[in-house]
Image (cartoon, rainbow, N blue to C red):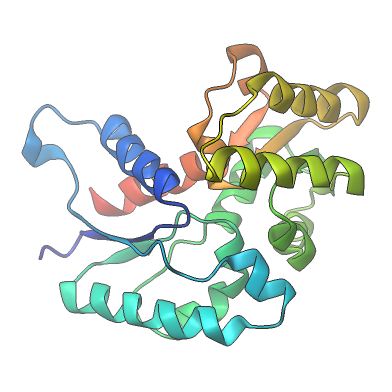
Length: 231
């Protein structure tokens, strides 16, 4: 396989992985098939739930399983690895020690983009899983880039988790109005300059143009960086 091919560890969740694939195709400047990047996508849907293993102290269960995925991508000869799942980046350092292939750090790339776009000392809201929030991966990244992360209160965070697991992941249907109300609350009531969509499940949802202008979708940042490294 060519040197600039991209490996993808997906399945977290499967729909989000398919959206990632579609976005890579849509965002690539291509006039013919051969202009697109080469990808090897592993849709490992049975990987343990990231939030559960983190909160239950069962990290080795996740790392043991993802190691085989990394080995497969190594054997396929990929040049970079993308993992379209924010919560999994809690394990970023440990995953990177398992391979010499660079793993694109979606969290750091997203926060760097926000610092460059909105400026230092910006106040940043976040929509994410409990696992992402409690591990403080975005908080630490924001601190490193002189940004101020605003974490939703417990009541709002419970609502966000319900949307992620009960509505989007389960496929029972999403009330986009509720999501937009949460984002508007963070912008207007909490005075956030932008809101990170820090769960790839939100990438499945089509928000209005008015609300979207305040959002930074971490998946979009990962897509753009994946293309940049692969063309």
